[in-house]
Image (cartoon, rainbow over all chains, first blue to last red; front, side):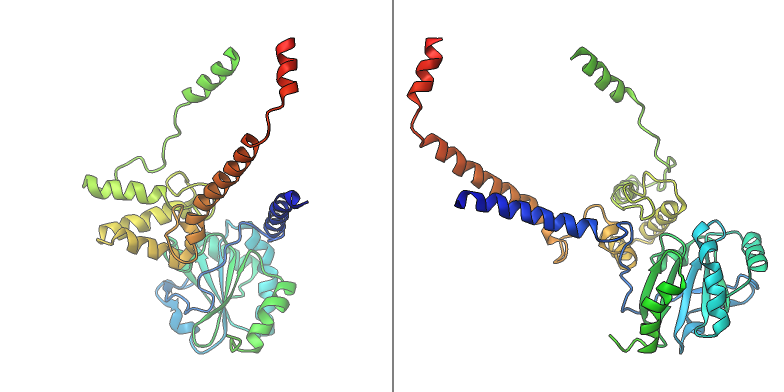
Length: 177
Length: 143
């Protein structure tokens, strides 16, 4: 009888690992190393007025959403209506990082689809994107009033994700940690 | 068999795909060697089974540019790895560093080989201690 124990343990171990691996959700999604840590400092020219800048100092003192977007990003178009709705409620200021884009196209995008952002920074060479660990737009970071990253959403935001992942964190003001 | 060998030969004959940054990044061969090694060991986060050396997506070229800049600034390999890991996590490195979190990656293969060797040893010893089946031997000889 005991000769079956070892194979059985091996098979069960294998099954446990397979179940963990197969039910993990999107295998391409990476945990952000910034959760619970200070958001990276940044300062970028404003998309709409490149003589002015938008950056970390604008975020300070309020819970804010930092949304990385680009006109070449199909999923950004998907989430755009939700961002407009969210901005209209006034729940939270949304700051954009226009990542690896061209200025005329980005401006046209905002003009045609509407502009949910308090301001968008123009990150033409992707330096700020790298500082924030961005690897695929859209990405959205929830940043607390004292500048700590509370949550990162990879992929398009929608009402359901917002209610589930963001609202509780905003309600507790990041105090959960 | 011949067909199989021809197939293998055909696959080997395919010209290696040209790397993206064919131009030299550094005049100093030592820096160039460090750069080449570094970019072949950093994962392209957008195209996750390629290194940034092999990928032409802009994130890979951005990361190559940042690594060139850091090397030119005189940063050590460890500092550059830190730069990547603080932004993208340990996953960005194809050759994970030996830290508490990644220790299992380095130790597990050796543990598994030891375990397998031990199991094989047990099985072989068990077989050798079994009495030789005389009938089977005789039957084989009779035929």
